[in-house]
Image (cartoon, rainbow over all chains, first blue to last red):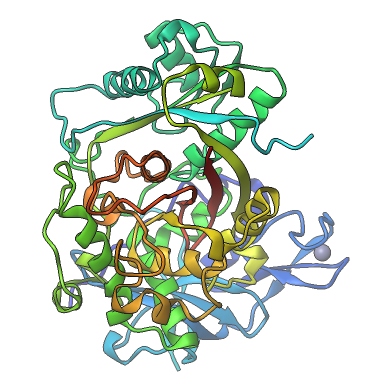
Length: 131
Length: 389
Ligand SMILES: [Zn+2]
């Protein structure tokens, strides 16, 4: 099956506060932003906590484990692909693709694990595959 | 200061075109403006407030006020996607109540069909300063697969079926058969919908709205002006707005911002969902309608599938006649933004000017609701409640 080309928007330093995420991704490490004031992790990463507006947020290593919250297989595309929201073991739910599997077997609640996939002209991005 | 009853919808116009390869976007805006002013019995010189959103070309109100050579003392370019124009009605009512303008003109127009835009199926690359973009664009989110994920989750949590969603399209098609301008005037069945090809699972081709060129316009006026015009009087009595997003990662795809904008509008109007005789409900997809009906309180959360089944949304047949022009699903979705046509059909119903086959008898209380942006990521919600005086 043909591989879907994965695009990247802008450059890793387009948003300077987010550059550490892409630097880590390039090394194969998956980071999550968490707040040292209220203690909660959030997604997508921000410099200012979306729960308490504290600017004391820090990068933490994510476990890379999660479950499918919802998904959809885009049939009307040159190469069909599965888009999903995955709820991370670390708390937040993130948009991603489910890859390296038979899409017909996908279901909500399924356990998935992180795999980095290369992009065209950008750093690798976190995707997930069934455990 | 309550804005309830301080403004009237005096003029409406839906451009008859659905494909406009030989017209410019600015021209379509101006043609709609002319149509709505003529409908109200007003002229360009009466306009002193102007409202438009992201579909307006160039610098929005700067470009369009200049193109139409208006003299405005109040402008507003609030853009919450397809729900913008419902918010504009609310903002116009507030501006009129505050004495900032007397006659507010709202326009929408676009030509995605002539421009060959793959509205629902192509990811859109924005500016990477948009804070979510780098964490979403690589995964190819499209309009349709974002709404599809909402449908998938709704089915998972509440047992909603594709057949129940299909009833929404079936109802819209029953209405569209009487609209000579509708893009899809043929009545369809539940089987037609569920047998149409999957675009993004679980949504089929016939779960999606049309892509059309065209536009619409509204004229909102102060009570004294409404009283002087020779038109049925449609008063704005309730309004609500909300934005819902991913909530820092606490994603919940089972409800929309209508959960907040709806109760606000009902509270201002002093009416309840069971009082509403006609509803214009944003119908970019069948699932959009189902989620909004629940959030607006027409049925319990999770019961939307049962509520829409068996023709309950069909005029003359069901309990809640909806989108009697055929809606975005069958009639028109100009500029990929369906908010203005939602207000227009509600006003037609309240005036008694809907097609006789779909006109709600003695319609005196109507609701219009819009969802703009993406139900699956971040969207605006705007609710209006209108009363015939
Ligand atoms: Zn915090």
